[in-house]
Length: 318
Figure 1: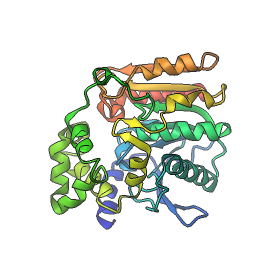
Figure 2: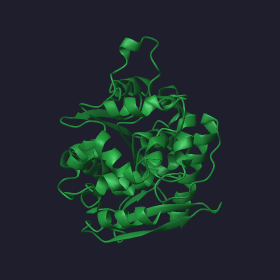
Figure 3: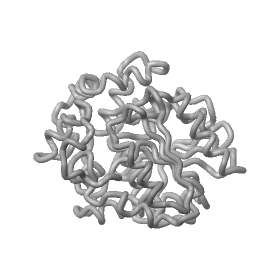
Figure 4: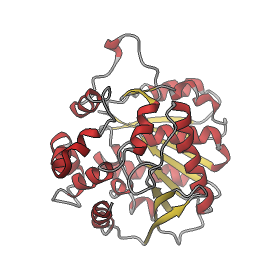
Protein backbone atom coordinates (compact mmCIF):
# COMPACT_ATOMS: atom_id res chain seq x y z
CA UNK A 1 0.00 0.00 0.00
CA UNK A 2 2.92 2.38 0.71
CA UNK A 3 4.08 2.06 -2.91
CA UNK A 4 0.58 2.91 -4.12
CA UNK A 5 0.52 5.90 -1.76
CA UNK A 6 3.84 7.14 -3.14
CA UNK A 7 2.99 6.81 -6.82
CA UNK A 8 -0.43 8.37 -6.26
CA UNK A 9 1.24 11.33 -4.52
CA UNK A 10 3.33 11.89 -7.68
CA UNK A 11 0.12 11.99 -9.70
CA UNK A 12 -1.82 14.29 -7.39
CA UNK A 13 1.01 16.82 -7.18
CA UNK A 14 0.06 17.75 -10.75
CA UNK A 15 -3.18 19.32 -9.48
CA UNK A 16 -3.30 23.12 -9.64
CA UNK A 17 -6.54 23.60 -7.70
CA UNK A 18 -6.76 23.21 -3.93
CA UNK A 19 -7.45 19.61 -2.93
CA UNK A 20 -7.96 17.49 0.16
CA UNK A 21 -7.08 13.78 0.24
CA UNK A 22 -8.14 11.63 3.18
CA UNK A 23 -9.89 8.49 4.37
CA UNK A 24 -13.63 8.69 5.03
CA UNK A 25 -14.69 6.18 7.69
CA UNK A 26 -17.96 4.30 7.21
CA UNK A 27 -20.12 3.05 10.12
CA UNK A 28 -19.06 -0.57 9.42
CA UNK A 29 -15.36 0.35 9.94
CA UNK A 30 -14.53 0.29 6.23
CA UNK A 31 -12.66 3.31 4.90
CA UNK A 32 -13.03 5.01 1.53
CA UNK A 33 -10.02 6.85 0.13
CA UNK A 34 -11.33 10.21 -1.11
CA UNK A 35 -9.92 13.17 -3.01
CA UNK A 36 -11.89 16.43 -2.99
CA UNK A 37 -10.86 19.20 -5.37
CA UNK A 38 -11.93 22.84 -4.82
CA UNK A 39 -13.64 22.08 -1.47
CA UNK A 40 -14.26 25.82 -0.99
CA UNK A 41 -16.76 26.01 -3.89
CA UNK A 42 -19.89 25.10 -1.96
CA UNK A 43 -22.54 27.08 -3.87
CA UNK A 44 -23.10 24.52 -6.65
CA UNK A 45 -24.03 20.86 -6.73
CA UNK A 46 -20.81 18.84 -6.43
CA UNK A 47 -19.64 16.45 -9.13
CA UNK A 48 -18.86 12.93 -7.90
CA UNK A 49 -16.78 10.69 -10.20
CA UNK A 50 -16.69 6.88 -9.88
CA UNK A 51 -13.84 5.03 -11.57
CA UNK A 52 -14.00 1.74 -13.44
CA UNK A 53 -12.66 -1.77 -12.84
CA UNK A 54 -9.05 -1.85 -11.64
CA UNK A 55 -8.84 1.94 -11.46
CA UNK A 56 -8.59 4.60 -8.80
CA UNK A 57 -8.69 8.33 -8.16
CA UNK A 58 -5.37 8.93 -9.93
CA UNK A 59 -6.76 8.08 -13.36
CA UNK A 60 -8.93 11.24 -13.28
CA UNK A 61 -5.84 13.49 -13.20
CA UNK A 62 -6.53 14.85 -16.72
CA UNK A 63 -10.00 15.95 -15.64
CA UNK A 64 -9.90 17.03 -12.02
CA UNK A 65 -8.66 20.61 -12.42
CA UNK A 66 -10.92 21.45 -15.38
CA UNK A 67 -14.03 19.99 -13.77
CA UNK A 68 -13.47 21.75 -10.44
CA UNK A 69 -13.10 25.33 -11.64
CA UNK A 70 -16.70 26.25 -10.76
CA UNK A 71 -17.80 23.51 -8.34
CA UNK A 72 -16.41 21.00 -5.86
CA UNK A 73 -15.36 17.66 -7.33
CA UNK A 74 -15.20 14.46 -5.28
CA UNK A 75 -13.61 11.25 -6.44
CA UNK A 76 -12.94 8.14 -4.40
CA UNK A 77 -11.53 4.63 -4.66
CA UNK A 78 -14.43 2.20 -4.78
CA UNK A 79 -14.68 -0.21 -1.86
CA UNK A 80 -12.32 -3.08 -2.64
CA UNK A 81 -10.14 -1.04 -5.02
CA UNK A 82 -7.18 1.33 -4.83
CA UNK A 83 -6.46 2.57 -1.30
CA UNK A 84 -9.95 1.88 0.09
CA UNK A 85 -10.72 -1.00 2.46
CA UNK A 86 -10.80 -4.46 0.93
CA UNK A 87 -13.53 -6.43 2.71
CA UNK A 88 -14.95 -9.82 1.79
CA UNK A 89 -17.91 -9.22 -0.54
CA UNK A 90 -20.96 -11.47 -0.91
CA UNK A 91 -20.35 -14.04 -3.62
CA UNK A 92 -23.72 -13.67 -5.36
CA UNK A 93 -24.10 -10.93 -8.02
CA UNK A 94 -26.97 -9.09 -6.31
CA UNK A 95 -25.23 -9.14 -2.93
CA UNK A 96 -21.92 -7.90 -4.37
CA UNK A 97 -23.64 -5.09 -6.28
CA UNK A 98 -25.61 -4.06 -3.21
CA UNK A 99 -22.44 -3.94 -1.10
CA UNK A 100 -20.89 -1.48 -3.56
CA UNK A 101 -24.02 0.66 -3.73
CA UNK A 102 -24.47 0.73 0.05
CA UNK A 103 -20.84 1.81 0.48
CA UNK A 104 -21.41 4.72 -1.93
CA UNK A 105 -24.49 5.83 -0.01
CA UNK A 106 -22.84 5.58 3.41
CA UNK A 107 -19.83 7.47 1.98
CA UNK A 108 -22.22 10.21 0.77
CA UNK A 109 -23.83 10.40 4.19
CA UNK A 110 -20.46 10.57 5.91
CA UNK A 111 -19.38 13.33 3.51
CA UNK A 112 -22.56 15.33 4.17
CA UNK A 113 -23.41 15.66 0.47
CA UNK A 114 -27.17 16.38 0.08
CA UNK A 115 -27.24 15.69 -3.68
CA UNK A 116 -24.75 15.33 -6.51
CA UNK A 117 -24.07 15.11 -10.20
CA UNK A 118 -23.02 11.46 -10.38
CA UNK A 119 -20.58 10.33 -13.09
CA UNK A 120 -19.43 6.74 -13.51
CA UNK A 121 -17.03 5.14 -15.98
CA UNK A 122 -17.31 1.48 -17.05
CA UNK A 123 -17.97 -0.56 -13.86
CA UNK A 124 -18.44 2.79 -12.12
CA UNK A 125 -21.22 3.58 -14.60
CA UNK A 126 -22.97 0.31 -13.78
CA UNK A 127 -22.76 1.03 -10.05
CA UNK A 128 -23.79 4.67 -10.45
CA UNK A 129 -26.91 3.47 -12.29
CA UNK A 130 -27.69 0.93 -9.58
CA UNK A 131 -27.20 3.69 -6.99
CA UNK A 132 -29.59 5.99 -8.89
CA UNK A 133 -32.28 3.30 -8.88
CA UNK A 134 -32.07 3.05 -5.11
CA UNK A 135 -31.35 6.68 -4.18
CA UNK A 136 -32.85 8.93 -6.90
CA UNK A 137 -33.28 11.86 -4.50
CA UNK A 138 -29.50 12.16 -4.28
CA UNK A 139 -28.82 12.36 -8.03
CA UNK A 140 -29.33 15.64 -9.93
CA UNK A 141 -27.92 14.22 -13.18
CA UNK A 142 -26.52 10.77 -13.99
CA UNK A 143 -23.56 10.77 -16.42
CA UNK A 144 -22.57 7.35 -17.75
CA UNK A 145 -19.21 7.13 -19.50
CA UNK A 146 -18.77 3.98 -21.59
CA UNK A 147 -20.77 2.05 -18.97
CA UNK A 148 -20.12 -1.67 -18.51
CA UNK A 149 -22.80 -4.28 -17.92
CA UNK A 150 -25.80 -2.82 -19.73
CA UNK A 151 -26.70 -5.05 -22.71
CA UNK A 152 -27.93 -8.61 -22.58
CA UNK A 153 -25.43 -11.07 -23.98
CA UNK A 154 -26.41 -11.86 -27.60
CA UNK A 155 -27.21 -15.46 -28.41
CA UNK A 156 -25.43 -14.99 -31.76
CA UNK A 157 -21.65 -14.52 -31.22
CA UNK A 158 -21.41 -12.64 -34.55
CA UNK A 159 -23.33 -9.77 -32.94
CA UNK A 160 -20.60 -9.22 -30.35
CA UNK A 161 -18.16 -6.37 -31.07
CA UNK A 162 -14.59 -7.73 -31.06
CA UNK A 163 -12.82 -6.67 -27.85
CA UNK A 164 -9.22 -5.39 -27.82
CA UNK A 165 -6.29 -7.71 -27.11
CA UNK A 166 -6.01 -6.77 -23.43
CA UNK A 167 -9.66 -7.66 -22.82
CA UNK A 168 -9.11 -11.05 -24.47
CA UNK A 169 -6.04 -11.56 -22.27
CA UNK A 170 -8.01 -10.81 -19.11
CA UNK A 171 -10.92 -12.97 -20.25
CA UNK A 172 -8.57 -15.90 -20.87
CA UNK A 173 -7.81 -16.23 -17.15
CA UNK A 174 -11.34 -15.71 -15.87
CA UNK A 175 -12.23 -19.35 -15.65
CA UNK A 176 -9.24 -20.08 -13.44
CA UNK A 177 -8.84 -17.03 -11.24
CA UNK A 178 -9.71 -13.42 -10.63
CA UNK A 179 -9.26 -11.11 -13.64
CA UNK A 180 -5.99 -9.48 -12.54
CA UNK A 181 -4.35 -12.46 -10.84
CA UNK A 182 -1.60 -12.45 -13.46
CA UNK A 183 -0.46 -9.01 -12.23
CA UNK A 184 -0.06 -10.23 -8.66
CA UNK A 185 1.85 -13.32 -9.79
CA UNK A 186 4.17 -11.08 -11.83
CA UNK A 187 5.43 -9.35 -8.68
CA UNK A 188 8.10 -6.73 -9.46
CA UNK A 189 7.60 -7.34 -13.19
CA UNK A 190 3.97 -6.23 -12.86
CA UNK A 191 4.40 -2.59 -13.99
CA UNK A 192 6.20 -3.85 -17.09
CA UNK A 193 3.34 -6.23 -17.76
CA UNK A 194 0.85 -3.35 -17.56
CA UNK A 195 3.00 -1.39 -20.00
CA UNK A 196 3.16 -4.37 -22.37
CA UNK A 197 -0.58 -5.00 -22.45
CA UNK A 198 -1.66 -1.35 -22.15
CA UNK A 199 1.02 0.81 -23.82
CA UNK A 200 -1.78 3.23 -24.71
CA UNK A 201 -2.02 4.36 -21.08
CA UNK A 202 1.44 5.88 -21.22
CA UNK A 203 0.44 7.78 -24.37
CA UNK A 204 -2.85 8.98 -22.85
CA UNK A 205 -1.09 10.64 -19.92
CA UNK A 206 2.02 11.77 -21.80
CA UNK A 207 1.26 15.47 -21.21
CA UNK A 208 1.81 14.89 -17.48
CA UNK A 209 4.23 11.96 -17.29
CA UNK A 210 7.00 10.83 -19.61
CA UNK A 211 7.89 7.83 -17.42
CA UNK A 212 6.03 4.75 -16.16
CA UNK A 213 4.09 6.55 -13.41
CA UNK A 214 0.67 5.53 -14.71
CA UNK A 215 1.68 1.90 -15.32
CA UNK A 216 3.08 1.76 -11.79
CA UNK A 217 -0.12 3.27 -10.42
CA UNK A 218 -2.36 0.73 -12.18
CA UNK A 219 -0.12 -2.11 -11.04
CA UNK A 220 -0.08 -1.05 -7.37
CA UNK A 221 -3.85 -0.46 -7.44
CA UNK A 222 -4.26 -4.11 -8.37
CA UNK A 223 -1.34 -5.86 -6.67
CA UNK A 224 -3.19 -6.20 -3.36
CA UNK A 225 -5.89 -8.46 -1.95
CA UNK A 226 -8.41 -8.86 -4.84
CA UNK A 227 -11.46 -7.77 -2.89
CA UNK A 228 -13.40 -5.59 -5.36
CA UNK A 229 -12.03 -7.73 -8.16
CA UNK A 230 -13.64 -10.83 -6.63
CA UNK A 231 -16.91 -8.92 -6.32
CA UNK A 232 -16.68 -7.90 -9.99
CA UNK A 233 -16.15 -11.52 -10.98
CA UNK A 234 -19.31 -12.46 -9.06
CA UNK A 235 -21.25 -9.78 -10.96
CA UNK A 236 -20.10 -10.72 -14.46
CA UNK A 237 -21.01 -13.51 -16.81
CA UNK A 238 -17.80 -12.96 -18.75
CA UNK A 239 -15.66 -9.84 -18.90
CA UNK A 240 -18.01 -7.92 -21.18
CA UNK A 241 -21.33 -8.96 -19.70
CA UNK A 242 -23.16 -8.61 -16.40
CA UNK A 243 -25.16 -11.40 -14.79
CA UNK A 244 -27.81 -8.77 -14.00
CA UNK A 245 -27.76 -6.54 -17.11
CA UNK A 246 -28.63 -2.94 -16.40
CA UNK A 247 -30.80 -2.55 -19.50
CA UNK A 248 -33.33 -4.78 -17.77
CA UNK A 249 -33.50 -2.33 -14.85
CA UNK A 250 -32.80 1.16 -16.22
CA UNK A 251 -36.54 1.90 -16.31
CA UNK A 252 -36.57 1.68 -12.51
CA UNK A 253 -34.71 4.99 -12.19
CA UNK A 254 -37.22 7.69 -11.33
CA UNK A 255 -38.45 9.55 -14.43
CA UNK A 256 -37.20 12.96 -13.34
CA UNK A 257 -33.54 11.87 -13.12
CA UNK A 258 -31.81 13.07 -16.33
CA UNK A 259 -29.25 10.74 -17.92
CA UNK A 260 -26.41 11.50 -20.33
CA UNK A 261 -24.43 8.62 -21.86
CA UNK A 262 -20.97 9.41 -23.26
CA UNK A 263 -19.16 6.87 -25.43
CA UNK A 264 -15.85 6.75 -27.19
CA UNK A 265 -16.48 6.39 -30.93
CA UNK A 266 -13.89 3.58 -31.03
CA UNK A 267 -14.90 1.77 -27.86
CA UNK A 268 -15.39 -1.98 -27.52
CA UNK A 269 -18.50 -1.29 -25.41
CA UNK A 270 -21.87 -1.61 -27.24
CA UNK A 271 -22.79 2.01 -28.02
CA UNK A 272 -26.30 1.09 -29.18
CA UNK A 273 -27.17 0.86 -25.48
CA UNK A 274 -27.77 4.62 -25.43
CA UNK A 275 -30.55 4.32 -28.03
CA UNK A 276 -32.08 1.42 -26.10
CA UNK A 277 -32.09 3.42 -22.88
CA UNK A 278 -33.97 6.20 -24.70
CA UNK A 279 -36.61 3.69 -25.80
CA UNK A 280 -37.01 2.43 -22.25
CA UNK A 281 -37.35 5.95 -20.82
CA UNK A 282 -39.61 7.78 -23.34
CA UNK A 283 -40.83 10.32 -20.80
CA UNK A 284 -37.40 11.15 -19.38
CA UNK A 285 -34.36 13.14 -20.45
CA UNK A 286 -31.83 10.77 -22.04
CA UNK A 287 -29.00 12.02 -24.23
CA UNK A 288 -26.33 9.86 -25.82
CA UNK A 289 -23.25 11.04 -27.66
CA UNK A 290 -19.97 9.72 -29.01
CA UNK A 291 -16.59 11.45 -28.79
CA UNK A 292 -14.47 11.01 -31.91
CA UNK A 293 -10.92 9.77 -31.47
CA UNK A 294 -11.73 8.12 -28.14
CA UNK A 295 -11.93 4.49 -27.10
CA UNK A 296 -13.14 3.04 -23.79
CA UNK A 297 -11.17 5.46 -21.59
CA UNK A 298 -12.88 8.51 -23.09
CA UNK A 299 -11.80 10.82 -20.26
CA UNK A 300 -8.12 10.15 -21.02
CA UNK A 301 -8.30 9.67 -24.81
CA UNK A 302 -9.89 13.09 -25.46
CA UNK A 303 -9.74 14.88 -22.09
CA UNK A 304 -10.37 18.40 -23.41
CA UNK A 305 -13.52 17.41 -25.30
CA UNK A 306 -14.67 15.16 -22.45
CA UNK A 307 -14.16 17.90 -19.87
CA UNK A 308 -16.07 20.42 -22.00
CA UNK A 309 -19.01 18.02 -22.40
CA UNK A 310 -19.16 17.24 -18.68
CA UNK A 311 -18.85 20.95 -17.77
CA UNK A 312 -21.79 21.73 -20.06
CA UNK A 313 -23.90 19.05 -18.33
CA UNK A 314 -22.93 20.34 -14.88
CA UNK A 315 -23.76 23.92 -15.86
CA UNK A 316 -27.23 22.77 -16.93
CA UNK A 317 -27.81 21.58 -13.34
CA UNK A 318 -26.78 24.84 -11.64
